Figure 1: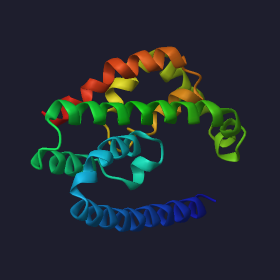
Figure 2: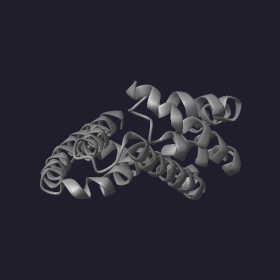
Figure 3: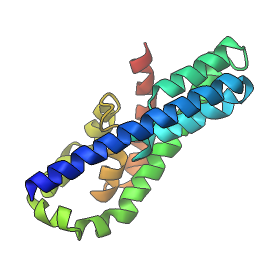
Length: 178
């Protein structure tokens, strides 16, 4: 069973990488041909990077590229670009949280979750005890950045508390840039 799971995981990773290269090529071509529309791309790319699952297919580099195109063509200043990125990331985090909240009960009943009930319970306990820190630290771990809001939703983390912490912690994204 483990070898089948490993094979399926390797196949999944390969498909993600192929899809990601394809998507990246399409987006780079589009951005090169539509510099004025790069303004719209900023919140979309920030949303996609923050939203559970989409962050696997879309590199944060596209947000940087779109922002650079907008800045270089003097379409917006740094403050305007930052506001658009902030709003996109906030919406992506919140949407991911509510996807986790909505799908959590179904996820708990899957064979995957049932086989890993102890590990999932430990993760849930960790989120209950350290959720505030998980939100902040997760911003600096690209591999799990988009998954954390959904995990918090699945774990039953307070939606109001998540919103407040998300609003407070989103400016930490700028620490990555500086």
